[in-house]
Length: 255
Image 1 (tube, rainbow, N blue to C red):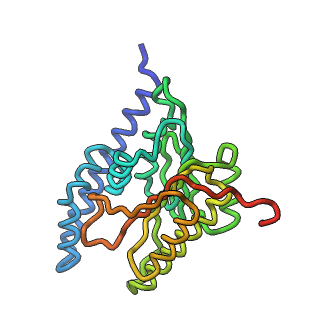
Image 2 (image 1 turned 135 degrees about the vertical axis):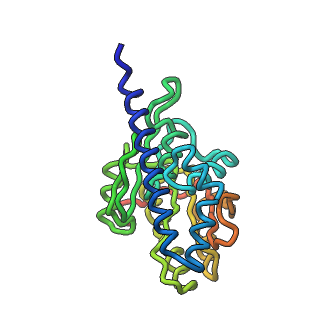
């Protein structure tokens, strides 16, 4: 008897993942040989990172998957049947977690089937159970219109954001740019987030963090600050988890 198409696809993805890992290791070794000093130390630490190793072992696209897994295990923001948008989705690790947790592939026939949409300026390789909008700016009204067209009934239950702007090296400027991106998500939430919905967004700590926190507290009933263990200690990244969205979408008179 021929194996089912799902088994064939699973074997294909496992083989593809192994080949990709082999290519990464080979490339990394060659790259390490050409580097010295701080760059060499950073790369060496990266490949010794327990979460990098776990990502390779469990076929996640990058270590950031474990940040979302950790948060969801503790706060239960994803469950079967929910509709999710992943902003700044590339390379797709958070989308992988979301697909699993909301049953977007319908793998569990006894659970509701969810939906996952990923958006990023960069290219994103296809992922079973997810719909991607690559080369798309989340702050562009044209992208936002496309998002509403793609989403079932134009709405989501959860907005995820691990996105960040291209770093300039000027800490305050980078901080301000990321806060601005997060605030743009709240504007988008007015149009696509169901009442009672959840928003999880990354920010870099700094002088304007309180502006984002204040806005979140206006729009959600519960807001907390998180620093997952999977987040590197030396990193300035922190997350706001906002639950129970209490503001309805804009009315026609507001748009």
